[in-house]
Image: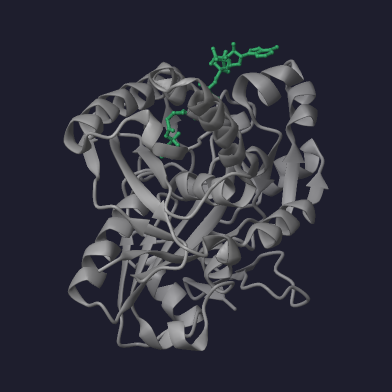
Length: 386
Ligand code: HMG
């Protein structure tokens, strides 16, 4: 039985900050941000968006009536969730009009949880071939104004449907994975911004990629020449290059150029949005299949997922027969191009306007002219969505 990603879509809010403007405001050289880090823009999250709205807005782009009937599990991966008890998947189930007779669950392990969700979905469909699983990865990456991590902020969501006979990508069931207790990035319950040792996190990411790559080769007998491209977790786009550079000399000449060109294709969307945490590696995958000019059905792509703390997984997928027809490339590009650019002052105001308190009634800047699902504010301690 062939199981994999049948459909995927992304969503990011309608506001973006130009990072050259941010660099100048912070007294940094713009090239540090655009070349050294590899980011052009970052998503700015208004207070009427959160992980639920972004995840639901991504999923609404792909769900048909038939999907709604067949989906009987919703897996919601996030590390910037909105409740310590209730799963974001339950809100998503209602807002997406899915059946009450479905399982709903939220997963957390930093940026890695989306991958775990996909692997669970794969196993579930193996056991229940007629079912479909909706996997949502949605996050807001917040480090704080004028912190070293600020340039790597961002936000957005990826929604994917896992099923048998997928139209886009088949799982090859060749995962290697590892976990190790490391203090590179974490967020205590009383904080809205993460504590991060940025340089350590970069080192651990590189180290885990290298370790898993050796293990993967041993287990599968594959080499770098077997892959048309890589999708990396991209907290910032330079991170993917740092990882791939460690092994690129294992490829033959033409293959090296191809992998580097496809790495650039995989970075294009993240360059415009920033870190999506759980969704980043899948935005990179979407970017690769949307922007590469040479991918062919039957070819394999490698996927490296990393979540601080730390846990990583490396696996591969195979491009399906007519995958080109089903990649939402134009729609994703249009969504990114249509965003409004905000000034640094506007971004700072929006950053500080995220509503955190559930006490009393409050209203966000939600507006009924928008066609998306929005977070309208707090009423009786409840988050109001419509
Ligand atoms: P920093 O210390 O401000 O930057 O923080 P830097 O001094 O290391 O410079 C960055 C790069 O810019 C360097 O290149 C400089 O040489 C270059 P590199 O040596 O890295 O190749 N540079 C320039 N290039 C061109 N022209 C110039 C120029 N000036 C300097 N004029 C850091 C950077 C990424 C550490 C920081 O932003 C940070 O802490 N970010 C957050 C943590 C992070 O993203 N970690 C990534 C790995 S961990 C991960 O992926 C998990 C995560 O997503 C969370 C989760 O799992 O939940 C974060």
